[in-house]
Length: 245
Image (cartoon, rainbow, N blue to C red; front, side):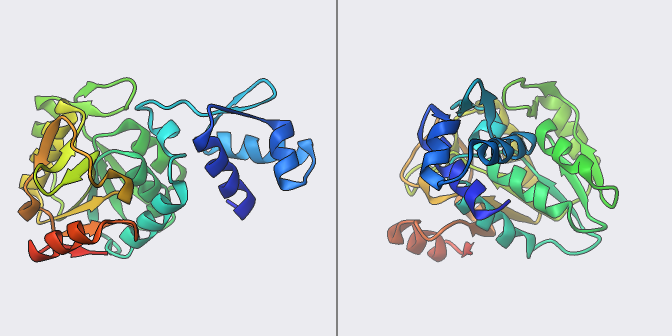
């Protein structure tokens, strides 16, 4: 992805619809070049083409949420790559930042990815050098997550030391929270099983409290985020023993 395509993602994420002509004027390029960029970004699952332009649908669909703060999420995912060793089995839970992590991780060789998310599993299909274990369960159509007791039984059959989990909110009072009760139940179970929990999130989630608590602060080993995290939250989490990257 080139710099112009990244800028297009920024623009689309802030507007409900952007026309090809508008993008051509912003970047000083031809409509043909804009369409080439949009075709590439759509093929990568970042946006949706419509007649005359492109649209961003703000929903729980991962491909839509990839657009929001994309560059920050990409930087976070690249940092997370440094914690995955060759030949290792890791669990990648759900969420847009984790989807980017999976996309980057499959560029490596000899890594096994365990996931309860169909979108993330599909991101891994482009590599013949890695294995993917998709946990079974009840399918949530919009988020493409698998939920329910069957997922927990599947988790019990596989071994992994590291899990990468997304969140929807954090405050010092409520801790790490999620807006989806069923997916939160799976994330909590994952945190109980693995040795190291990595929370991947951009700083926009700080100061927000969502529906249900995910896990205790003490259950998290690493927080990988961007520079926008409030100093008070950074100090609080550091005192609790979390390594902040």
